[in-house]
Image (cartoon, rainbow, N blue to C red; front, top):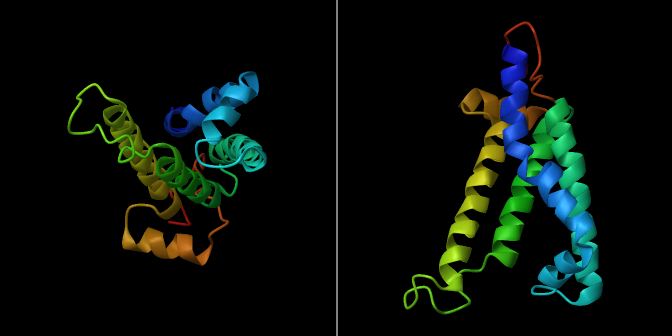
Length: 156
């Protein structure tokens, strides 16, 4: 049962990316590029969407499998922060205080959801104690061994 819970928690953490966001990019590539064009010219927007697709699929899979999951979680945390800063700019529409139903309010909550999700990935990266931060720093490409039957995570 503990393995199922460990897998379920990790699945909840990456579910936004794999399968949903990755599928959205594949099924509506033009729409994804159009959204990316808000922050970059077309050739760069295409490259960003393709890079995002790779990050979402590969890093989410690594987290689910427990393979180099610390590094994968760090990459996804960085990805969440970058997307918040590039595409969730609640400060740009200018209607935050004047319109409760305006675009800025929606972007505000999306921005902070991305930041909170990054925090969840950083917990997976570094753990929750000073000892776990030291262990993660010593072996950044190591695994947390999420499905170990011993009940002891030797890396943390």
